[in-house]
Length: 302
Length: 302
Image (cartoon, rainbow over all chains, first blue to last red):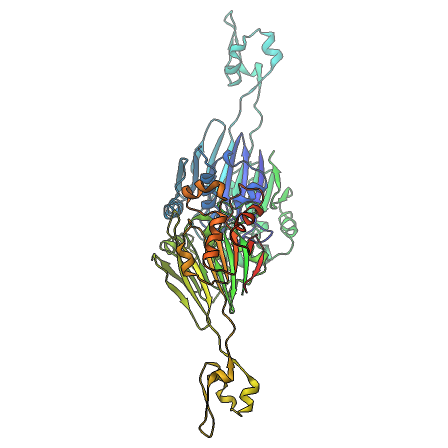
């Protein structure tokens, strides 16, 4: 499970600072989370294969989180994409994109699905055999969601020596890995726990941007492997958080601590601070394992 | 009069190729022409002062010519712009921009005016004391216009020795420069041509992208100082021009020749050709003074 930061600054794209966009690689999925202006160029720069992205999650309709979306959708079309694309984002996103495609008379040649969000409680928005994705309701100047990505628990691991000792046929391995007991030819039942050990612990990732400090987030994401939480300001500018509905680095760390997260990634920095190390220093007064998001950084989620 | 190329490639932004956007400096105006994704970053990179841009001209509603507009408009707002901004572009552009501002609940704090275009004949769309701007109707897959920027003729130049010889009061200089004759105290009339010489020749710039080969363009822009004309393909791929409604380098040169232009700037290159020199070579079989647009290039218009 790997997170690639394409952009992690707030407000406006600049020569060396890109607005929010990140790619999460999880169980063979490549999820794009937010899509600020210039995201398609950042994807190219990081050599991320466009066709592997099948789901895009947009947190909210502020420009620094979605102005790159229509360009990316168009580029997929120009590159003759065939496989489907799903956009998960706030109500209104479909109208924005389709109006632009309509006026440019350039419809996509691939199936494009919009899944519009308008609920204020956590919702399961994607589920397949290996992962689930839930919304994390946030509180910002406009309707906003974070996203909580979780690997599903995998199969239990066969204790191969035990299985062979009982001379169990390989045809039963799959059901044993799923947790079933084994029944031998003589009718004896061997309980599953004698034949397997627990599956690898699952990993999870929570993306929370943009939002005011919202303690209930911690309840929803208890035990998360990695939390990305916006830290637009430092405590010394807390009044700006109140005004603009953002969080400080310390508040991000409080969420990580309360959620018992393994790792906290900070981002969405205001460019008023010359040096982003100050965000880490502030967060570490509360929570130790802090990583600073930086454009182009790849973060492993364990 | 100076033209700064911010981007000059067709289709999609890439790591080192930006889509169409250029800045024309003319008589103290700074006009932005087209605004592909990433234009605001290119403006920063070229250190062009945002507040000096008061008029933006959008040729047509394909993404590589306007996907950067909403971001630029938003950034102007975030930077607390106060002076007015005028957008000249195809009908529909107002709806696209205002829908996005509405859904992001972030209106501009400065006056934003849209001047929507839907005519298919040349129109005077801007005029002040020093310049005029006309549309150049183009033919593309969607409604499109080029733009023809002309300096107005300035004042005639005083022949200061002559004026002093007749002891003409400085109070009359202004009217003499405007072409009036001078009347001396004794009633004698001195004809203007004895006191002045003609004004500096005026300069002009025509921007034509995207379009099929359209000979009537040459009629409208006769004697233009500098013509920018798209050359998406070479003659060997003329069939693609027919299909996609673009021009070849040779066709761009034919327009320049027929218009008796002083200089031709080529751009809007397809990225299928590894080397853009091939466009220049092809155009020069028809017209000699050819410049290749390149991202970041500054071109003087004489």
